[in-house]
Each structure stands twice: as C-alpha cells, then as structure tokens.
Length: 82
Image (cartoon, rainbow, N blue to C red; front, top):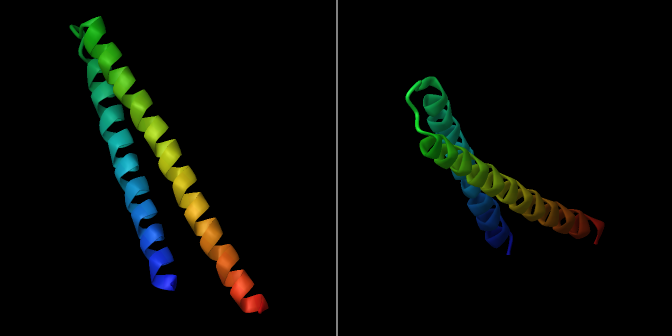
C-alpha cells in the first residue's frame, strides 16, 4: 500500500514541477512582450492570460501535493501509533 502513496506523491510532485516550469515560461513570454516596444496590446493580453492560467495551475498543483503528502504523513503517524 505504501507504494501506491509514493506513486501519488511522485505524480503530485511531477505536476507541481511542470506547473512551475509553465509559470517560468509564461513569465518569460510576458517579459518579452513588455520589452517589445511594438508589442500589440492583444499579444500582451494573451501573454498575461497565459501567466494567469499558469499561476492558477501552480496553485492547484501545490494544493494537490500538500494534500497527498499530508494524507501520507497522517497514515504513517497512525501506523506508528498502532
């Protein structure tokens, strides 16, 4: 049973890692749009939306990771108590 939880933790960690990478990419794209003096407002808006979505996904991934690790830690503690 412990293997199953490690797998969930690994999946949650992978999701968090990927979400972090997406935030980095979205931030860099937004920063590039800001530096481009000729950037169209639509391109800037699209880059801002991409960053907002990436940050939302990062928050969800973080919550999932926290939840999975908290459940696993509780189960370990319960196992030690018995």
